[in-house]
Image 1 (cartoon, rainbow, N blue to C red):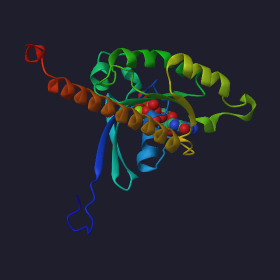
Image 2: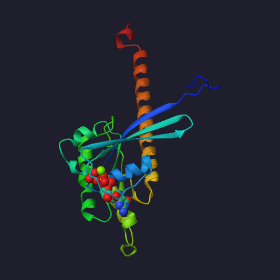
Image 3: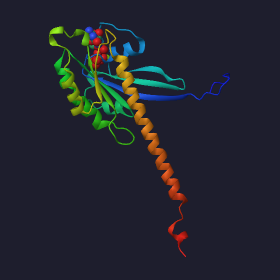
Image 4: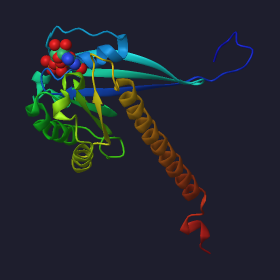
Length: 216
Ligand code: GTP
Ligand code: MG
């Protein structure tokens, strides 16, 4: 609450741990740097282990969201450490490089690694969005990404949605992040609602006379 505000305003704050994973050199760090600091560099400096970044968003007048982005090195692919890194994450972005088909072939493996090592408190898989990155390098002759095939791939592999992105041109990154946040908040509201209902059911049961009291 703001003490010197003429009106009492309750600010709600949320902190979300979000993973950014995918093969080596697909642009995970570049996407995060573009999203958080609005910068881009052509120099490639491979991430070692894991890096962190924080993006603070004024979601609505009374809601602030902090996105803690975990930038996991492509080198960590299915290493024993991913289980540690994934712990308590509420969502993920899986990134591949549209100019290197091998990075797309690895996408289902990253997804399987995620699903086997992390889930939401209710047990459902965490929401995951696929980023087809480096769209600025796609030449006109390749005709871009086939929307229908990509939609089908997402459906078959448990991705909520996909976005063609470019960290270089700053294209679609904000949209993808906003979409993922909406999905996270939707799930959190559902979870809170379930918990409220369970608590209410518990209270109802406590208030009911036990069979002993009811008898004779
Ligand atoms: P690891 O940390 O090794 O897993 O790689 P990464 O996924 O973090 O990739 P990084 O962001 O370091 O980018 C790898 C290279 O691709 C760098 O040289 C970037 O400049 C370049 N790159 C990243 N995103 C884009 C993009 O959208 N377009 C173009 N043209 N180059 C990009
Ligand atoms: Mg990196």
